[in-house]
Length: 192
Length: 192
Image (tube, chains in turn blue, yellow):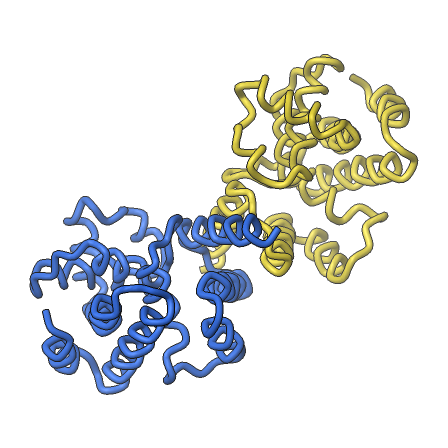
């Protein structure tokens, strides 16, 4: 699928604000891929499509998670805000004919992260957090880190995301904890 | 083992300051057990003994963790500050003849917590954090919570402990995350 087609698909499926967010993630992901030696086309495409299932109703999302044996069932025990990510990847595969596993995985884990994140996983996870439309306390610090150190920026995003959930008394999807532990051990081994 | 014997054993094994901490944990655990319908004798004994292996050298702690198949090996991949807890339980069992599984488990998980914490697990975990000798920002808030709601106080301790590790860029033992998720789900179910 070409990026222009993906953009038109997303424009048709998402409200204006979420469409602009998707374009922002796509562009940011492309820039991060360029900087860190990733595949720019894959990054732009995954970024454009990552939220494709964001406005599907919860019962439809849950039905897809139950139907597809390759999506962990335990998604359903955690916040419904996570469900659109794996279902978006299923939609991209089944309806848009995307077969590239790297793209599908980066879409699947764009909200939670996962234990061993690929370069493309990190790029999409981070681009979703720092694209120019995002505005929340601390985002500029993560943007700054993203200029020079991808893992540091992803660590900061994971740290802030987990702390936010802890403060709000929400549970945390286990893969997010594992992503944090795995990355911080890597960082500490390199620097420490 | 009687509490007086345990106290003499601990006095002989630990430096003065850590001995006083152990007495504080024992007394606090006894009070919490009384308040929340736990076994006061077990709580006082587990509290007195919880840090018994605190000053064993790291290589000895690691050797015990490797030898005992019932201690998860992954302790060794995480901070050595965690190791004295399971090894203390092994020492209590092998050298002091303590066979009560509840006491040994509460000792094993006093630093990390675990997925499904028993009443005694929670009492020792919390008493270790709030005994009168402890002095750190926020401890009084947890002490206050412990007056009226054991789960709320344990949640606060887990939240603060995890946030502290995230801020310090340290990994978090997986059972601690699971303890947090499990408890917060329980609390949210009860309060709606």
